[in-house]
Length: 259
Image (cartoon, rainbow, N blue to C red):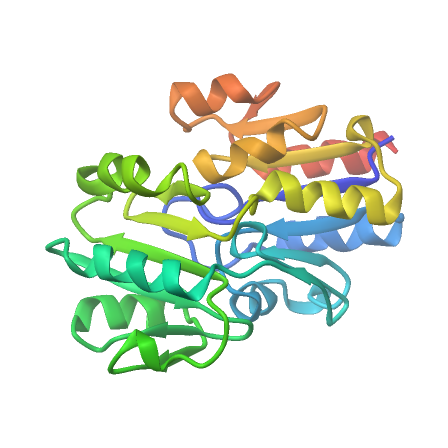
């Protein structure tokens, strides 16, 4: 019996540039919650951004935010894992040295960016609708760095190998979208966050279902028997999951009618 369902958001629940979750999917999640299934949104996004996506079920589900650096449940912080500040500032300097790269620093309740790039600002504020604070210097941020991201509008693949080679042995470093690469604190990934949730609620791997489409999802595939990669994922992502599906919605429907 499935007791826990964990899904990535961008490229998984939201496909083809969609920025809102369908009413049908919200209905399915609500009915699963009514039957005692725990649903968790697992994403590189900030908590406030994820929270607004889920409408009337937003207070009934769990949030594995910032690739697992922060877990929220019913308005309570379960855990958080920051990046060492000195290391974080080194990463930021490395990103800023790359032409065409913009920085996003995630805190507990908002993200921090500069206003240097109008298109990037518009994407963060008006497309992603992040709760955003503008800074002149990232050194001025007073709270802990929970995640640092590099964005390259022309595609992060032009820089991802360099970033992974330089930082991957020191910190979790993963491509999270066509234009994004994320840096997190020690041992932070969605899989380790999933294990925290499983221990908290005494849920086994064979009672867990996961969905994802990118490299920051593969660790949670390893912690669930019912692991689904999206059909449009790259071959190496599909190879890490046990099953494939074109949509999350179709599998949620099946789970609901199997119980």
